Amino acid sequence: MNEAARGSTRDIARAAVRAELTRVALELFRRDGFAQVTLDDLATAAGVSRSTFLRYFGTKEDAVLAAFDGSDRRLADALRARPADEDDWTALRRALDTLIVRYRQDPAGSLATTRLVRETPALRARNLEKQYTWRPALEAALAERAGAEQPTLAQSVRAAAALDCLNVALDHWLVSDGELDLVRLLDEAFAALAAQRPGGTKRPGGTKRAGRGQ
Amino acid sequence: MNEAARGSTRDIARAAVRAELTRVALELFRRDGFAQVTLDDLATAAGVSRSTFLRYFGTKEDAVLAAFDGSDRRLADALRARPADEDDWTALRRALDTLIVRYRQDPAGSLATTRLVRETPALRARNLEKQYTWRPALEAALAERAGAEQPTLAQSVRAAAALDCLNVALDHWLVSDGELDLVRLLDEAFAALAAQRPGGTKRPGGTKRAGRGQ
DNA sequence: TCATATGTGAAACTGAGTGTCACGGTAGCC
DNA sequence: GGCTACCGTGACACTCAGTTTCACATATGA
Image 1 (cartoon, rainbow over the protein chains, first blue to last red):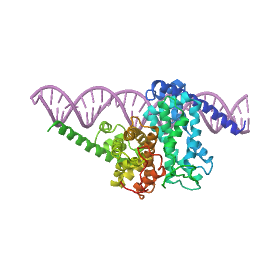
Image 2 (image 1 turned 90 degrees about the horizontal axis):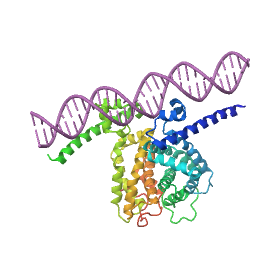
Image 3 (image 1 turned 135 degrees about the vertical axis):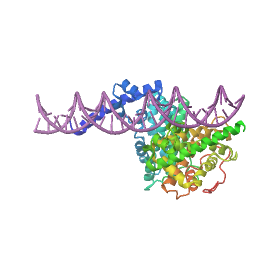
Image 4 (image 1 turned 45 degrees about the vertical axis):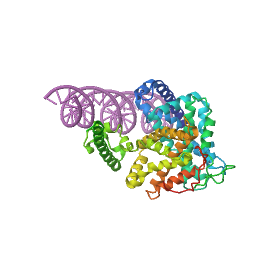
C-alpha cells in the first residue's frame, strides 16, 4: 500500500466518523433544540469522548455547518468554468446551481437542517459569518474572469448580492415547507436585481434599459 | 416630579453608565484585542462588577454592537418617509443616509469600531446576525409603501442587497483608511445593482448617478 | 417612618472551548 | 517477529462566558 493510499485510508476512516458524528448531532439538535444539547450529550450519544468530538468539529455549531465547508471553492470553480463572455450576474446564478444540488438530492434533510440553522441564533450567526468569508473567493473569480487583478467594488457587491439571493430563496423555500421550487425561487430572486450592467467582458443579451452605474 | 420625568431621570442615569461602559470597552478592545479582554477586565476597568456589566450588555459582543440597536426601526421609518412614487432601490439608498450620518460625525471613532468588528470573527458574526434581523422591518416598510400586506420575494432581496451595499461600501472605506468618501462608495455600490425593475409603484426617476447627497 | 421597588455586588453553577498528558493500537523498519 | 515512532483517543484541569440566586443598599412613595 503506497503512501497516498495509506493516507487516504485514514482519511476515509476519519470521514466516516465525521459523517456519523454529524448524523448524531443533527438528530439530537432537531429533537431537543441546539441549545439544549451539550457537548457531553453529543459525545455520549455518538460513543466518543468530548475531546474527540471537539477534535472533529472545533465548535458545536460546526457539527452542523461544516457540511458547507468548501462552498467558496466550489462556487469560485464554477464561476471560472462559465463562458468568458457571460455577464457576472448570469455566471453567479449558474454557479449557485452547484450549491443547490444538495437541496434537490435530499429535500427533507436539507429542509430540516436549513430550518434548524434559521431558527437558532447561534447557528444563524455562524452561518452568515461563514458565507461572509466566501466573498473573497467569489470576488477573485469574478475579477479573474474580467482579466483584472483586483475585484472592483461592483463585483464585490454582486458577489454579496448573489449570496443574499440564495438566502432569501432558501427562506421562502423554508416557509413553503419545501413545496415551492427552489430553482424557481432563486431565478426570481436574481431577476429582482437583474438587468444591472455586466461586470464581465460583454453586455448582457437583450436586457432592456441597462443601468448606468459604475 | 411626575412619573414620566422620574422614569426618564433613571433612564438618563442608565444611559450615562451605559455610554461609559461602552467607551471603556471599546478602549480595551482596541488596545488589547476583543478576545484578550475578559469580562472581569472590563468590569474592573469600568469600576463596576461583572454582574453589572452583564446587566447592561447581555454579551461581550453587545458592548460594541448595542450602538447599532434600533437601526432597523430608523431605516424603516426613513423608508416610510420617502415619496410614495419613489422606486424601492432609490428609497433604500436614501434611507441608508440616516445610518451613515454617524460615520460622518465621528469618522475616526467609526473607523476604529468598524475595523474592530471586521477583524474580530465573533463580532463579525454577531453583527451580521443583527443585520439579518433588520430585514423584516425593511421588507415590511417596502411592502407598506407598495400598499401590500406581505413583502414580495423581490422586496426581500432588495432589502438584503441594500444592506450588503452598506457593508461592501464600509469595507472599501475601511481599506482606504477613511480616505474615500463613504457616500460616494455607497452610491457606487448601489449603482452596481441599479436599474433593476422598480418594485415600487413607479419606474425609477431621473436620478443621474452619483448625485451624492441626501 | 415604614414599605417597596430598583440597582448593584457576591457567589455558585453550567457549559464551551483550550491545552496537556498518558495510553494503546497501527504502520513502517530492521 | 519484534522494535520504534506516530497518531488517534480519552481523561483531566483550566479559563472564561453567561445564568441564576440571594443579600444589601438606596431612594421613592404613602
